[in-house]
Length: 222
Image (cartoon, rainbow, N blue to C red; front, side, top):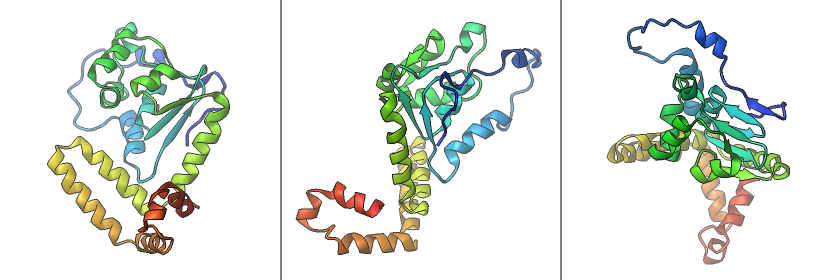
């Protein structure tokens, strides 16, 4: 979980004065990720869930760090996100142009990147920039409950499910092959065998329990 102790900011934009010191002579195209890209992509690829709790402003590089997390939840009336780089004559260079289209679609990504306007929590939720927008008093408890719920599930299943979801960026047939491979890997784990046995013992295969399967999942999560 990532959150800020500063009530006004989650993370501000990158240091423009530092950007000004970068070489103006265009170097050869890179053949590997730069340091910032490496850092934020670790959040996407690490075998655990990452969640951002946004209660202040997250612009530029701050927005891009959030975009690299698996989930984002924002406080209504407090959270603000934007990519203001084009207004300065540059572009989002910390993954924004690559992650936004995957989340919100090309047209909305271009509106965010080219318009350089602030997005409040409600509109960000509608666009898919964040998962949900919640009242400030509800945000912390919701994120805490979700994080603890996920953490209660087998770590191997979380890691393999996340890897399988990431495989959706491949052509569909390739992604399905990856999904089958990850599924077979989960079957080999002791927690999966134990939880499936408990599921059956608690009546998970019966009509009565199926009518309220969410309740059984809650029991497994405890």
